[in-house]
Amino acid sequence: MTHLALSKISKDFGGTTVVQDFNLDVKKGEFVSFLGPSGCGKTTTLRMIAGFEMPTAGQIVMDDVDITNQPPNQRNVGMIFQAYALFPNMTVTQNIGFGLQIRRESRAVIKQRTDEMLALINLEKHADKYPYQLSGGQQQRVSLARALAVRPQVLLLDEPLSALDAKIRVSLRSEIRAIQKTLGITAIFVTHDQEEALSISDRIVVMNAGEMEQVGTPFEVYNFPQTRFVANFVGSLNTANAEVTDPAKGLLSVGGVQFITASDLAARKKGEAVRVSIRPERFSFLSEHKKDNALDCVIENITFLGSVVRIQIKIGDSNFNMDTFNNPFLELPKLGSKEKVTCSKEAVLVLDE
Amino acid sequence: MNQTSDKKRGGKFWAWFWMILGILYFFLPLVATFLFSLRAKLGVLSFTAYQHVFNDSNFIYNFSYSVLWGVLTIIVGVLIFVPTAYLIRLKLPKFRLPVEFITMLPFVIPAIVYVFSLVRTFSQPPLLIVNSPALLVAGYVILSMPYMYSAIDTGLRAIDVQTLTEAGQSLGAGWGTILFKIILPNIRTAILSGAFLSFAIVIGELILAQYLVKPAFAPYMTYLIQQKAYEPAAMAIISFALTWAAMGIIQFIGRGSEQGQIAGGH
Ligand SMILES: Nc1ncnc2c1ncn2[C@@H]1O[C@H](COP(=O)(O)OP(=O)(O)O)[C@@H](O)[C@H]1O
Ligand SMILES: [Mg+2]
Image 1 (cartoon, chains in turn yellow, orange):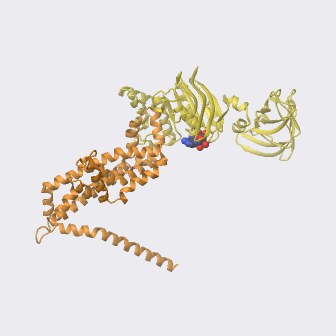
Image 2 (cartoon, rainbow over the protein chains, first blue to last red):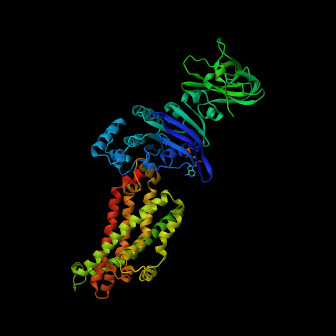
Image 3 (tube, each protein chain N blue to C red):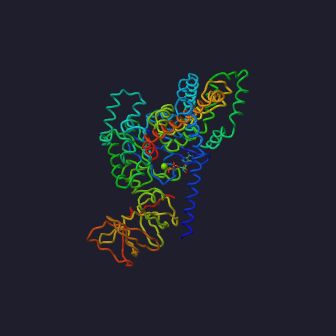
């Protein structure tokens, strides 16, 4: 069941198009992330859902009601800002109760609901403090409670974790996700951090320069990027120029070295230039177990990244990264040595454009 | 080495010299006036003149009116300038400089010129309101505008007007609620300082009240100067003390909400 539908949304600012032909159906209780580099139009799209910006074209429908031109205070959406935006003159309790007061709820209801929310975010002890007396993480939790107290139809979060330090960012991220699941509320989460989007979302909308590049589950977006942009932006990915040598058999030439791919090349011609990508973790050193691609390489560099060791290899003229899990018994090759690596044909992705 | 420290010492000396000279220039007349006001009784220093002032029902009458004009000026000023400055910060940043320029105009238009234009414009139909106290208050609002507006604007600059507004909107609040429950309380200190400056201006203002023929403190004092010697001096000191008390209250209230202001600045 579609809960929130954006159809053919676009937005111009003084002649510059910043969002173009945005189409998205969000299901009830779904957690969707907008992921993309700074300036790609994530915030603008979110603000159109909130009603702070009016789309230049297109339609927004929530629970079968067209809200495209409704002012923000008549939509039932909760908004979380990067800068918390708590009201400095009000205590935590007053902040959380603000929306209920606007809705003229009775005192008993306000009390009951704010208590409920305080328990949900674990800040009962800080109920009477002012925002300036709280840490950033606590303030953002209060702002979450404030938005949820009025039971919005959809929760919008614009980079809510960007102002926090790394540890809090990760713990609050799972807290947000847990609360969202508990309440079964629909959420749209804007971030430029691919790890954040991958870890928290049911679905990710990858955006670039005002357009949607790909929509899919974290698994799909990570493992099957459809465009070069997605391949580069999500995860760390090797990409290389290649030439189709045999569309029927799925053969490619990457700088003279032959690769076989499971991607469908039926629509491509022999000799066509394409772009291929291979995730670093899909490479491994060749053992007896024979895989589709067996490739000669030279070890160029080795970097420890904690749980992972990243090995830079050169296959033909192309550089690739190869990731392997770290363990104390790991035997690493010497720099400059010649080795054989392998990857399955499913790992060799042929990208659009 | 020696030379520079000599120079420094010299610089310090002159800094102090000019500062003390400035303070003397400012306070000497006040002290003189104060001492003069104590000499109402021959041969002894006494507060007789002050007693006279406080027993003078005309003083009470005129001063009370000035206080009333001051309070009305503040209320009308806040109601006009808070929404204006807010709207310009939020929606019309293009107009900020022109509006700032307009608010400074009372500094460059002499009050006498202004009041003359007021009387000319509003003393014939269809705008026959020259006798209405509203015209006086409106005039005071204009005179205090540079202080009121810039104080409010400074207050708004210290908070994140746009985000707070949007947070309010997304919780269902309309413009009135946002203005009075979110914006106003968070610029309280700024509004207070603008209010007290406006108050001080209205208390000391002579020309508008005189030419629009309304009871007020300054015209009464001017009148009294021609009649008496010591009482006007006492009155000057009283008005000065009241103005300074107002400043003290700003400081006090300002300190009370300092933390709120810091929080707003996050
Ligand atoms: N109110 C506005 N007026 C003009 N341009 C804007 C406005 N808001 C955003 N933009 C422009 O639109 C583009 C997208 O901005 P935004 O949606 O904030 O990107 P993101 O959130 O993905 O970083 C940017 O180039 C930005 O400069
Ligand atoms: Mg943004």
